[in-house]
Each structure stands twice: as C-alpha cells, then as structure tokens.
Length: 159
Image 1 (cartoon, one colour):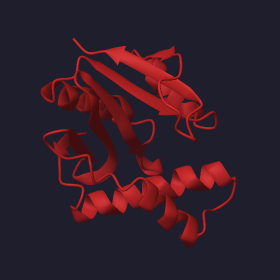
Image 2 (image 1 turned 90 degrees about the vertical axis):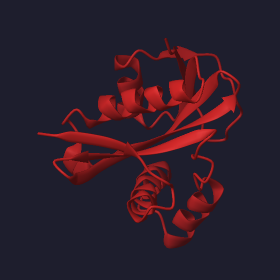
Image 3 (image 1 turned 120 degrees about the horizontal axis):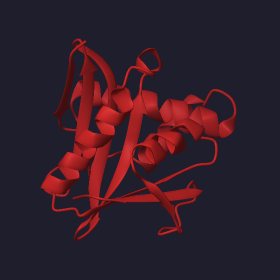
Image 4 (image 1 turned 180 degrees about the vertical axis):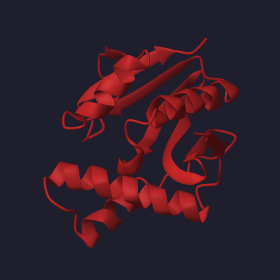
C-alpha cells in the first residue's frame, strides 16, 4: 500500500469534491439525519476553506494507491500558532492509517508556515476525531475560541 500526501489549491477539483463530502458528513452527523442541499450549501459558505493557501495556510489531499482517501488543512491563526481543520478520511479508507498520516502531514505544513503550536476544536459527536487527536499527541485544553460548533479544544506543541 502506497500513501501520497500532497498540498493542492483548494480550487483543485478533488479538493472541492472531498471538502463537500467532508462537510456533508459533519453536517449530517450534527443534524442526526442527512443534511439537505440547502444546509450543505450554507455550511460550505460558512467554512469555504479559501484561507487554506500559502503563505498562511495549506490544504492537503491523501491518496492510497492512487485513490483519493482523505484531506486535511491548516491555517495560521496568529504568529506561531496554526489550526488543524477539515480533517477527513473517506469511509472506505478508515482504519487504514490515513488519519495519523494526514495529521502528521498537516503538522509538517504548519511547521513550514512557522507554527510552534497546533490547535483544533471539535464537537461532542465526533468521538472518533477526539480519539485520533489524543492518539496523535494532542491534549485537551481550555476553550480558546467561541466557535458555535466547538465543544472540545486540543493543542500540541510542534517541535
């Protein structure tokens, strides 16, 4: 099995497609039912990811044996601090080791952007995400933002 994780523009067709798939899953989980097209469009408009570009961000696609498997982004929120965002692995690739690889690649991108600390927030219902972050060295911390969907906050020193 061969993994390839590369930085791409958020306008890349694969990036657009996987961000839509990611948003559909997290919105559907939030609502406890399939998200409507209007809800999905609203979520995409609220968080378009257009800031995940150099010099203050990065968006990464992960492929397994050439097949698009997942994505992750990072953005500088203040000098020395980046945020992990848009972490997603397609259902067919879950359990394959994609998630830790994507997180590590985002951390490398954040270091290149000058980050010494990576932060993220997530929701109660995203249990698998919280477990992933704990496994990859993130510590739950006090709230550092007031995002309406944030219920858990994590950070990790990048060395």
